[in-house]
Length: 310
Image (cartoon, rainbow, N blue to C red; front, side, top):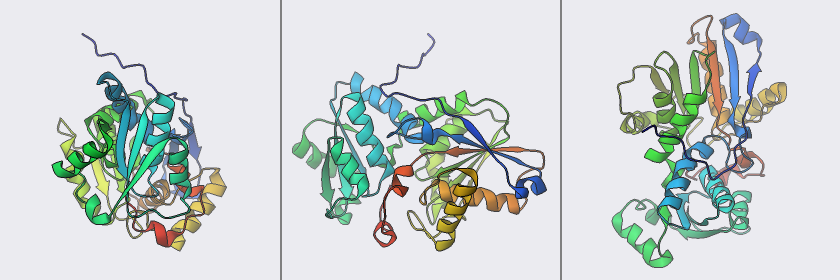
């Protein structure tokens, strides 16, 4: 029987492809496009929409009415899950790494406004979040819930991103995306024809381990993808003055909002790879804008954000 896609619980707005023009691209002989998935939903934007789609469906089918997930104080995933739960009729619980800090930052303020119950655990406890004892303690405290992992990456998330990749029309040779946990990259690789090259740009320092994480979700042999780990600007949620200046100047030139955690590093990395002649002349590069712009809407103290997780 043909496996038809379920009717999503979240609203979805079709997104445009924006062409970016720079003298550098003419010199390198490449064309650069941006798939604006940041515009697909006001709260559950970018790849988060696709990663949550089938998890929400599974939670509903299994009779759960509460979603529980994990993240740091500035987590895109916490923000998106709170928004998705509110729109889809679920209760939600966020297990937040670190102590509560008042006043709440805009990410956690939004999550709380959307009805998410915030539960803070120490960084030491948080490291044990996948352990059975930790999960059992959560069940005793909160009762029954549908668990979504940190960053939202699991088989159902990869399934959703694979579905998204299959909707992309021809007209590009390379697809580039930011990588945090590896689920989005795995889904893109699985959903695209093997004639396309998929490039993942790690936002983590020491992100080489993500190659193994991505491979866990691939159920075929793919030789058409690469993980690039040179453009993290110090590590997850860390930044540099150069990156912040680039985000502002590039964004102003092209009316393209970027954030300092994911898409800014991605765009920086793509530009550097083009400068270095890493793309074949005559090729078209499609950059996936994965949203996460809520992080730039706040006056974030970058010293505080440096130790946050996904």
